[in-house]
Image (cartoon, rainbow, N blue to C red):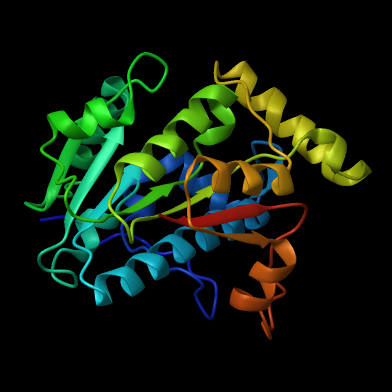
Length: 269
């Protein structure tokens, strides 16, 4: 049984995750609480984006489950806690966590240290996106290709080569059943940013590069939407900062909102 976690909650919450602080560890929790810069952005701005992208993904899943979808695939699952906090809420849902084998091993260590149980609805699907395909990993994990699924790909695409990103999206469009969906974020070219935005982006890019994970792909939103249609998606929705703020951050007294040029896309097979 997981231990009770401390909470860091903006009121009203955009996204509530009672396990997040327990699983990320004390150093990251301290950075969030003191409001210091994290990867070159003020922690509240980065927290807002992380919260809203997870909220959109899980809203999409809830809508799909109402249509009978029972498979949720987390691409580059990282420290996502969805499966460990929602088993009772979503009975019958199978959660496939797709990630690099080393990252999955690290996550399982973090879960153990935080005393968070691995629930029965989780299936781990180790995949190195640079050397094998998503389909390879899902086949090994006994994913049911005859049924639709929702995919969430959050905080991952900037670290992959552009061809790898497009190949993965193409695989979802062409191999998944009709009614499947994906929600993902991506980085725009730095030339699309204004002076302050570009400075923040450069600081973040320098920070992650120093950690051995440089940004490797950038996409123009309009061109990417056309590419998604070309590879086989039947519909594509574009969510920029303005539309996400209107949808999730309206009428807040604390001023919490997205800043800069955040982008999410949702596409349906």
